[in-house]
Image (cartoon, rainbow, N blue to C red; front, top):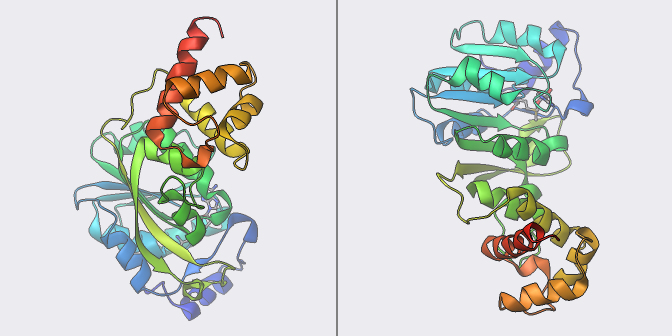
Length: 290
Ligand code: SAM
């Protein structure tokens, strides 16, 4: 079935008596070249399984099902489940699950559907929860080889940003601990119905085999990163004193000096390695009774 067409999308919605749900970030693709390219470039191999988040009426799902062994698609909107059973009827390798990905037990999902093969994630994500979904996938520790997602262009720029640039933020540094990210291509807002306010980009994250930096406590690393960006216009010392108040400002100055960093440096200039060095120094203080 040709799903990626404005008229087809409208007809399916009318036949099922349903409407686009803004609260679920529903902007459906209507240019067939886009889902075909996302599926093609998602990094997976034909024998792999794919987890799709938010299949909508099945536009990308169908492209994935034609290329990969198995697709498991989690959709929050109950009204779309009936649609998907119809549109995916010709694809026995597609399993549709009704659910909220943020409430889904990913480990249980993995054990049930993906323990027998390599697995990657591929999705046109709902924009209202892009970052929480990506962090949930990355922090799950599950071996997703690639995470290929269409997201707001601005978030894509953040994820691919380098230290010191305006787009560099907590999510850049946190995500870089788990994966390397590249932008595959840009997609303008005219490719969706309803037309969203912002343009999009497709990114592909490749999970690191091992973290690129060594830390004694991941919790401490992420605390330091978040504190540094919480108040990004402040110096790192002031941002850390506000975000992790257990230590004196003078101690933060000492730590930075011992690591050869300028005490007036801002967090937005730091590489992941420098965040790791600070977190390891804090962890050491902590174990000595911080
Ligand atoms: N994949 C379709 C496409 O490309 O045309 C639809 C993409 S649309 C941007 C996002 C989809 O995610 C919608 O179908 C929406 O209902 C679904 N969705 C929103 N929040 C979700 C959540 N928390 N868990 C699972 N699906 C969700």
